[in-house]
Length: 330
Image (cartoon, rainbow, N blue to C red; front, side, top):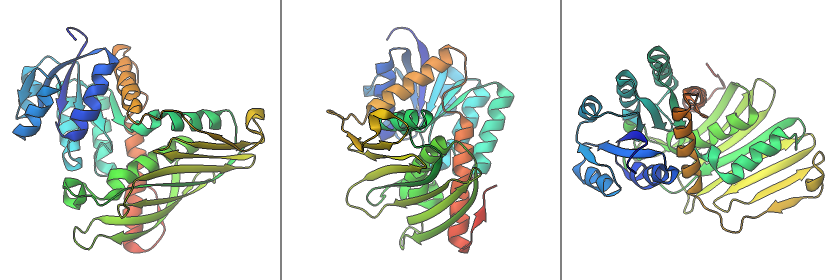
């Protein structure tokens, strides 16, 4: 487009190019001004998606280009420094999950953004998934009564690139675990108090491979998670059990199961099956929501606090898994 919010992409890997960039285009409010990546192949590929000017050094892009906002989609261990550079340049920021590799780094990003008056949106995209948005709306309508327990899980096959190694912020907890943890935090709506975890470590990479962890929340809700990179096919589910009903949502089928003693339309167990589930629609909704928050000069729908809270739990999972003890969430 010829006009709109002037955007730079920092990190031209698969996710930034093939998921976030088409979503930016679909929103109809962005101009793809520039992209930056030290990998020339990735940089050229990003240009094919419509970015006008390439940069091998993102700091040069930030110095030279007039940008309203920057999308950061680097490997995890590079996220914090990239975020701080964007914030210090005064641009509005969208950063891919998990925004940092631990809570301390996420807090550093949050404090820098507050000082600079810059908004930060974190890409916990599954909140914009249609089936999960439905689950959230049902909870807000009181469908399950008082929430008591949650079961959730997410995983897929073995990680193979930078995301396989701890030193680059890899491992299944920081790859998929942050997504499902954020989902449950969003649905429970209260802070985590205590965590207990068991971890199977990958014998070659040393990263977490299979993890089971439980979280107790301040409101008494208890949640159990499984996260693994040992499967042949991906899975993602969340099930919520309350005093007056239950809800389960699954991916990639997008099927939602509902039983409620509160909502008459679900007084008998119901299964909601979409005719044409579209995995990528959540990216379109996500990037449009970010653009609207920037244009409206209002807080983004998923701020940096979401990353701080999620990484606080993930930090505790790692600590508990190493110590074999329950850990209080800081």
